Image (cartoon, rainbow, N blue to C red):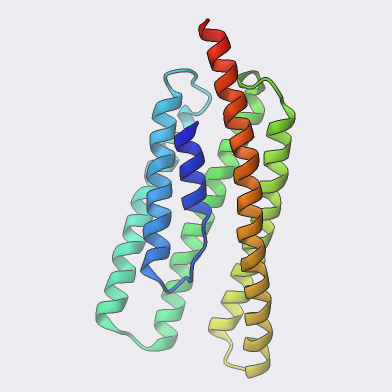
Length: 194
């Protein structure tokens, strides 16, 4: 469960869509998540179906890193670079949110893995808020990059900035809830091993 926690942090962490480091951080998160599926296989098959999506997301994110590096080297027109960055960011955001959603569905269908089921419910609630703020941030960033009208870019920039701060706050809340779930999971595991 430790690898799931670290992987979740990195794959859900948001930086500027035009920064290569955004994709490198997400790639690290996907790799940690993939290792988490292998670690969990020792105890349960509840997360086995996440292995393929985790490795696929890792490969796609590695491709995004390469594309972003090519953008830096080739220096295309600003609008083309914005469109490509938005497409790469949309793909990686979708993959990270979908992988986390699949993880939560697997947890919810295998509630016997934890002592306190309310930890799963709290984690789902904090993830839903994080996902909503991520969509709002992404929408604001999209408008800010694509519509060259000053009023729209200013408003979209403000919305994106506020949403990004809230993304970080909800990410920390989600990690707090995931850590509570992780300690509960480990307690249950220790008790079963005795």
